[in-house]
Image (cartoon, rainbow, N blue to C red; front, top):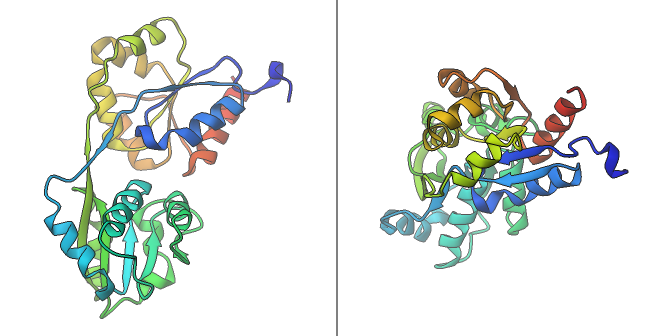
Length: 259
Protein backbone atom coordinates (compact mmCIF):
# COMPACT_ATOMS: atom_id res chain seq x y z
CA UNK A 1 0.00 0.00 0.00
CA UNK A 2 1.53 3.39 -0.99
CA UNK A 3 2.59 5.49 1.98
CA UNK A 4 0.33 8.34 0.79
CA UNK A 5 -2.80 6.30 1.52
CA UNK A 6 -1.79 4.45 4.67
CA UNK A 7 -4.74 4.97 7.03
CA UNK A 8 -2.70 6.14 10.03
CA UNK A 9 -0.19 8.17 8.02
CA UNK A 10 1.14 11.01 10.15
CA UNK A 11 -0.90 10.04 13.21
CA UNK A 12 0.79 9.84 16.58
CA UNK A 13 -0.64 7.01 18.66
CA UNK A 14 0.17 7.03 22.38
CA UNK A 15 0.47 3.43 23.64
CA UNK A 16 0.36 3.04 27.41
CA UNK A 17 0.69 -0.74 27.77
CA UNK A 18 3.49 -2.16 29.97
CA UNK A 19 6.81 -1.94 28.15
CA UNK A 20 7.11 -5.67 27.50
CA UNK A 21 3.67 -5.78 25.86
CA UNK A 22 3.87 -2.81 23.50
CA UNK A 23 5.81 -4.29 20.60
CA UNK A 24 3.00 -5.92 18.62
CA UNK A 25 0.62 -2.98 18.80
CA UNK A 26 3.44 -0.54 18.01
CA UNK A 27 4.35 -2.61 14.96
CA UNK A 28 0.75 -2.66 13.76
CA UNK A 29 0.46 1.11 14.16
CA UNK A 30 3.67 1.60 12.19
CA UNK A 31 2.51 -0.87 9.54
CA UNK A 32 -0.51 1.35 8.92
CA UNK A 33 1.64 4.47 8.69
CA UNK A 34 1.24 5.75 12.25
CA UNK A 35 3.91 6.84 14.70
CA UNK A 36 3.75 4.77 17.91
CA UNK A 37 4.62 6.77 21.02
CA UNK A 38 5.41 4.49 23.95
CA UNK A 39 4.59 5.70 27.45
CA UNK A 40 3.97 2.75 29.77
CA UNK A 41 1.39 3.66 32.41
CA UNK A 42 1.92 0.43 34.35
CA UNK A 43 5.13 -1.30 35.37
CA UNK A 44 5.18 -5.05 36.06
CA UNK A 45 7.17 -5.80 39.22
CA UNK A 46 8.16 -8.87 41.17
CA UNK A 47 6.04 -9.85 44.15
CA UNK A 48 7.61 -8.86 47.44
CA UNK A 49 7.26 -12.26 49.12
CA UNK A 50 7.80 -15.31 46.92
CA UNK A 51 7.06 -17.92 49.59
CA UNK A 52 3.32 -18.20 48.90
CA UNK A 53 3.89 -18.40 45.13
CA UNK A 54 6.68 -20.97 45.48
CA UNK A 55 4.49 -23.10 47.75
CA UNK A 56 1.80 -23.30 45.07
CA UNK A 57 4.39 -23.96 42.36
CA UNK A 58 5.72 -26.89 44.39
CA UNK A 59 2.28 -28.52 44.51
CA UNK A 60 0.81 -27.32 41.22
CA UNK A 61 0.28 -30.94 40.08
CA UNK A 62 -2.46 -31.21 42.73
CA UNK A 63 -4.72 -28.85 40.78
CA UNK A 64 -7.15 -29.87 38.07
CA UNK A 65 -7.02 -26.52 36.28
CA UNK A 66 -4.68 -23.51 36.17
CA UNK A 67 -6.21 -20.24 34.99
CA UNK A 68 -4.00 -17.40 33.75
CA UNK A 69 -5.44 -13.90 33.93
CA UNK A 70 -3.11 -12.06 31.53
CA UNK A 71 0.05 -12.37 29.42
CA UNK A 72 1.90 -10.93 32.43
CA UNK A 73 0.55 -13.77 34.56
CA UNK A 74 1.73 -16.28 31.96
CA UNK A 75 5.23 -14.82 31.81
CA UNK A 76 5.72 -14.43 35.55
CA UNK A 77 4.04 -17.71 36.55
CA UNK A 78 5.96 -19.76 34.00
CA UNK A 79 9.19 -18.07 35.05
CA UNK A 80 8.48 -19.04 38.66
CA UNK A 81 7.46 -22.60 37.72
CA UNK A 82 10.40 -23.30 35.45
CA UNK A 83 12.83 -22.05 38.06
CA UNK A 84 11.72 -24.96 40.25
CA UNK A 85 10.17 -27.67 38.07
CA UNK A 86 8.37 -28.44 34.81
CA UNK A 87 4.69 -27.72 34.34
CA UNK A 88 2.76 -30.94 35.05
CA UNK A 89 0.98 -32.51 32.09
CA UNK A 90 -2.06 -33.51 34.15
CA UNK A 91 -3.10 -29.92 34.85
CA UNK A 92 -5.39 -28.31 32.28
CA UNK A 93 -4.79 -24.65 31.44
CA UNK A 94 -7.21 -21.82 30.73
CA UNK A 95 -6.79 -18.20 29.70
CA UNK A 96 -9.05 -15.20 30.14
CA UNK A 97 -8.47 -13.99 26.54
CA UNK A 98 -6.87 -14.88 23.23
CA UNK A 99 -3.72 -12.87 23.92
CA UNK A 100 -3.16 -14.79 27.14
CA UNK A 101 -3.92 -18.05 25.32
CA UNK A 102 -1.34 -17.18 22.67
CA UNK A 103 1.24 -16.50 25.39
CA UNK A 104 0.59 -19.97 26.88
CA UNK A 105 0.82 -21.64 23.48
CA UNK A 106 4.10 -19.87 22.72
CA UNK A 107 5.56 -21.47 25.85
CA UNK A 108 4.39 -24.93 24.83
CA UNK A 109 1.40 -25.15 27.17
CA UNK A 110 -1.94 -26.37 25.89
CA UNK A 111 -4.45 -27.11 24.64
CA UNK A 112 -5.74 -23.90 26.15
CA UNK A 113 -9.32 -23.34 27.27
CA UNK A 114 -10.16 -19.77 26.24
CA UNK A 115 -13.12 -17.80 24.89
CA UNK A 116 -13.19 -17.12 21.16
CA UNK A 117 -14.67 -13.71 21.82
CA UNK A 118 -14.16 -11.37 24.73
CA UNK A 119 -11.24 -11.11 27.09
CA UNK A 120 -12.61 -11.00 30.61
CA UNK A 121 -13.75 -13.24 33.44
CA UNK A 122 -17.34 -13.19 32.24
CA UNK A 123 -16.32 -14.56 28.83
CA UNK A 124 -14.30 -17.38 30.38
CA UNK A 125 -17.04 -18.28 32.85
CA UNK A 126 -19.51 -18.76 30.00
CA UNK A 127 -17.49 -21.66 28.59
CA UNK A 128 -18.88 -25.17 29.24
CA UNK A 129 -15.51 -26.30 30.66
CA UNK A 130 -15.96 -23.78 33.51
CA UNK A 131 -19.62 -24.58 34.11
CA UNK A 132 -19.10 -28.02 35.70
CA UNK A 133 -16.26 -27.64 38.19
CA UNK A 134 -17.77 -29.04 41.38
CA UNK A 135 -15.11 -30.91 43.33
CA UNK A 136 -12.23 -29.55 41.23
CA UNK A 137 -9.16 -27.76 42.57
CA UNK A 138 -8.33 -24.63 40.59
CA UNK A 139 -5.44 -22.19 40.84
CA UNK A 140 -5.64 -18.68 39.38
CA UNK A 141 -2.32 -17.07 38.41
CA UNK A 142 -2.70 -13.30 38.56
CA UNK A 143 -1.20 -10.06 39.83
CA UNK A 144 -1.79 -8.85 43.36
CA UNK A 145 -5.32 -7.63 43.88
CA UNK A 146 -7.91 -7.39 41.15
CA UNK A 147 -11.47 -8.52 40.54
CA UNK A 148 -12.95 -11.35 42.59
CA UNK A 149 -15.68 -12.39 40.14
CA UNK A 150 -13.83 -15.36 38.66
CA UNK A 151 -12.89 -16.95 41.97
CA UNK A 152 -16.22 -16.20 43.63
CA UNK A 153 -18.21 -17.72 40.75
CA UNK A 154 -16.07 -20.86 40.60
CA UNK A 155 -16.44 -21.32 44.36
CA UNK A 156 -20.21 -20.94 43.97
CA UNK A 157 -20.04 -23.69 41.35
CA UNK A 158 -18.38 -26.03 43.84
CA UNK A 159 -14.66 -25.64 43.10
CA UNK A 160 -11.86 -25.07 45.62
CA UNK A 161 -9.91 -22.07 44.33
CA UNK A 162 -6.50 -20.66 45.28
CA UNK A 163 -4.76 -17.53 44.06
CA UNK A 164 -1.13 -17.61 42.96
CA UNK A 165 -0.14 -13.94 42.84
CA UNK A 166 2.96 -13.82 40.68
CA UNK A 167 3.51 -10.12 40.00
CA UNK A 168 2.45 -6.71 41.18
CA UNK A 169 1.66 -3.58 39.26
CA UNK A 170 3.31 -0.24 39.88
CA UNK A 171 3.36 3.24 38.41
CA UNK A 172 6.45 3.83 36.27
CA UNK A 173 8.65 6.72 37.31
CA UNK A 174 8.84 8.07 33.80
CA UNK A 175 9.15 11.79 33.26
CA UNK A 176 6.30 13.42 31.38
CA UNK A 177 8.25 16.30 29.84
CA UNK A 178 8.68 14.77 26.38
CA UNK A 179 5.10 13.53 26.36
CA UNK A 180 3.74 16.98 27.23
CA UNK A 181 5.84 18.59 24.49
CA UNK A 182 4.46 16.13 21.94
CA UNK A 183 0.90 16.78 23.08
CA UNK A 184 1.35 20.56 23.05
CA UNK A 185 2.77 20.32 19.52
CA UNK A 186 -0.30 18.43 18.32
CA UNK A 187 1.68 15.25 17.72
CA UNK A 188 -0.62 12.88 19.63
CA UNK A 189 -3.80 11.99 17.77
CA UNK A 190 -5.04 9.04 19.86
CA UNK A 191 -4.37 7.30 23.16
CA UNK A 192 -4.60 3.54 23.73
CA UNK A 193 -5.17 2.35 27.31
CA UNK A 194 -5.73 -1.33 28.14
CA UNK A 195 -6.57 -1.24 31.86
CA UNK A 196 -8.46 0.98 34.28
CA UNK A 197 -5.41 1.14 36.53
CA UNK A 198 -3.26 2.29 33.62
CA UNK A 199 -5.79 4.99 32.77
CA UNK A 200 -5.86 6.24 36.34
CA UNK A 201 -2.07 6.27 36.46
CA UNK A 202 -1.87 8.23 33.20
CA UNK A 203 -4.51 10.68 34.38
CA UNK A 204 -2.58 11.24 37.63
CA UNK A 205 0.92 11.65 36.24
CA UNK A 206 0.22 14.08 33.41
CA UNK A 207 -1.10 16.81 35.71
CA UNK A 208 -3.73 19.46 34.93
CA UNK A 209 -2.34 20.46 31.53
CA UNK A 210 -1.98 16.84 30.47
CA UNK A 211 -5.54 16.08 31.58
CA UNK A 212 -6.81 18.82 29.28
CA UNK A 213 -4.91 17.25 26.40
CA UNK A 214 -6.16 13.79 27.38
CA UNK A 215 -9.77 14.98 27.44
CA UNK A 216 -9.37 16.40 23.94
CA UNK A 217 -7.78 13.26 22.43
CA UNK A 218 -9.69 10.15 21.28
CA UNK A 219 -9.17 7.35 23.80
CA UNK A 220 -9.24 3.71 22.62
CA UNK A 221 -9.98 1.06 25.24
CA UNK A 222 -10.69 -2.69 24.83
CA UNK A 223 -13.35 -3.08 27.51
CA UNK A 224 -16.48 -1.27 28.72
CA UNK A 225 -15.10 -1.26 32.29
CA UNK A 226 -12.22 0.94 31.16
CA UNK A 227 -14.69 3.18 29.33
CA UNK A 228 -16.62 3.51 32.60
CA UNK A 229 -13.40 4.58 34.34
CA UNK A 230 -12.83 7.13 31.58
CA UNK A 231 -16.33 8.50 32.17
CA UNK A 232 -15.60 8.82 35.90
CA UNK A 233 -12.51 10.86 35.01
CA UNK A 234 -14.49 13.15 32.71
CA UNK A 235 -13.16 11.70 29.47
CA UNK A 236 -15.90 11.60 26.85
CA UNK A 237 -14.20 10.89 23.50
CA UNK A 238 -13.88 7.13 24.05
CA UNK A 239 -13.89 4.29 21.52
CA UNK A 240 -14.46 0.78 22.89
CA UNK A 241 -12.64 -1.76 20.72
CA UNK A 242 -12.66 -5.53 20.65
CA UNK A 243 -9.88 -7.20 22.65
CA UNK A 244 -6.40 -7.89 21.29
CA UNK A 245 -3.80 -5.78 19.53
CA UNK A 246 -5.13 -6.46 16.04
CA UNK A 247 -8.62 -5.42 17.06
CA UNK A 248 -7.30 -2.21 18.63
CA UNK A 249 -5.29 -1.43 15.49
CA UNK A 250 -8.34 -2.11 13.32
CA UNK A 251 -10.40 0.33 15.40
CA UNK A 252 -7.71 2.99 15.03
CA UNK A 253 -7.67 2.46 11.27
CA UNK A 254 -11.46 2.61 11.03
CA UNK A 255 -11.64 5.75 13.18
CA UNK A 256 -9.05 7.71 11.25
CA UNK A 257 -10.38 6.56 7.88
CA UNK A 258 -13.50 8.58 8.77
CA UNK A 259 -11.69 11.61 10.22
